Amino acid sequence: MNVEIVDDYQALSATVAQRIIKTVKEKPDALICIAGGDTPLGVFSALVDASRKGDVDLTQAAFVGLDEWLGLSKADKGSCREMVWGHFFDHLTLREEQICFFDGRTAAPAEECRRVDRFISDRGGISLVVLGIGMNGHIGFNEPGAATDTYCHIVDLDAVTQSVSAKYFDQPRQVKQGITLGMKTILEANSVILMASGEKKAAIVAQTVREPATPAIPATLLKSHPRLQVVVDKPAASRL
Ligand code: PGA
Image (cartoon, rainbow, N blue to C red; front, top):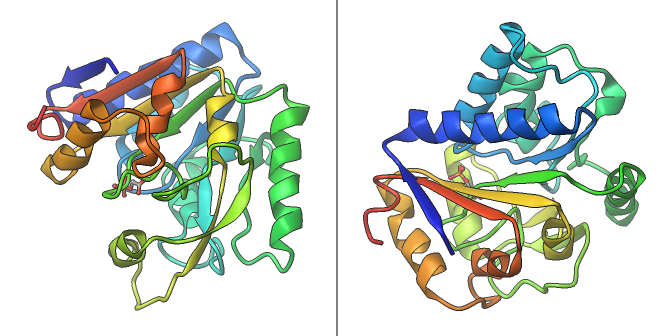
């Protein structure tokens, strides 16, 4: 696993944003998968800037969400939808049909999974998946022990994910399940970027780099991908 180490969060965000821009320049109708969470926020702001300056044209591109807390909608502060719209889509002028995100409040989770699977297959697959990494090595909500042969599916959240979730919410919430793109969806993407920032991610980044591929650390399963780019800032690289 080759790791590109950049100085800080700003450089990390700029590097990943440039990679997305390059992907869209090469394939204007690229399907990009974006994650919620804290790590990609700087990427969103760099992309919004680039779009405003006319450095990238996102009008033909499409976006699919990586995951969502089951039971939460865009109206719930800290949901993936709320974060991605608030920091990204609300600042761009995209058409509704360009975006497909899980509805965490769906009454029919299995159908919601198939809807997102279809959005991806109708566009010929994902061009680029942009991932953060969980404190437990999860990728999206592919939690430790994740199966490798899954497309979109419902997941029982790991205890670490449940406790880390509190940082996103403005009120106490019991989130026990998530809905996520599966490892197979991610591994079938043309290219994958894994990004990590901050000293708190240093231990899991080091484990991911050192350990052989194992479902116990889902991020290690990315090692089999032929076009994987891992970009981390210096604090996240401090245990390598
Ligand atoms: P974070 O989450 O970007 O908020 O650290 C990453 C993840 O859990 O995948």
